[in-house]
Length: 150
Image 1 (cartoon, helix red, strand yellow):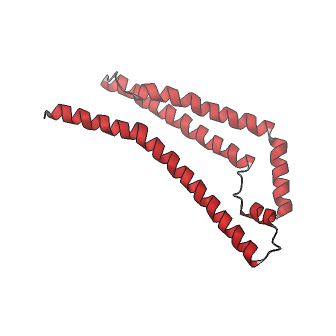
Image 2 (cartoon, helix red, strand yellow):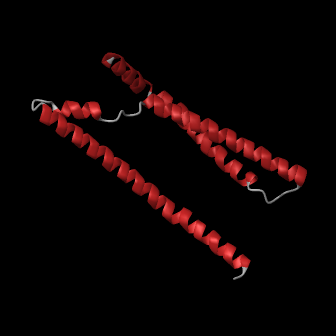
Image 3 (cartoon, one colour):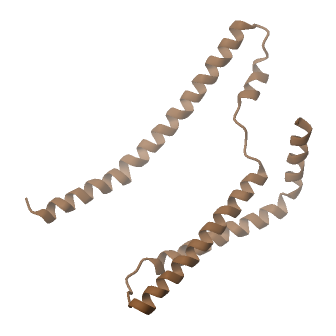
């Protein structure tokens, strides 16, 4: 068999694995994780009911529920990704311009991906600042609620 044909076949197989099998596997593993967490919660509640029939199930489930991310945490995550993507886009654009200017390499992907990442990062930053301004009262209410619970 020709070496080039063999290599092309291997590349196609790897591409199919990455494009089809990997996303299916990720979704399946995520669903299995959720099912296992649900089963564990069910077993804990059943064991608590067996030991003490007067147990408040709703209160127990509220205590076992995973904590929701606070608005402030969500906003800080947007700030983080905005900064990362903006700086990465800027760095890739500068590196792509360097390759064009010094090495005359006009076929580099950096000059394409850099300007694509920068607006996404800037959009995250804008989303952070607008969200911070609009959700200031809700963030204060969450903080007051957390202080009240502590």
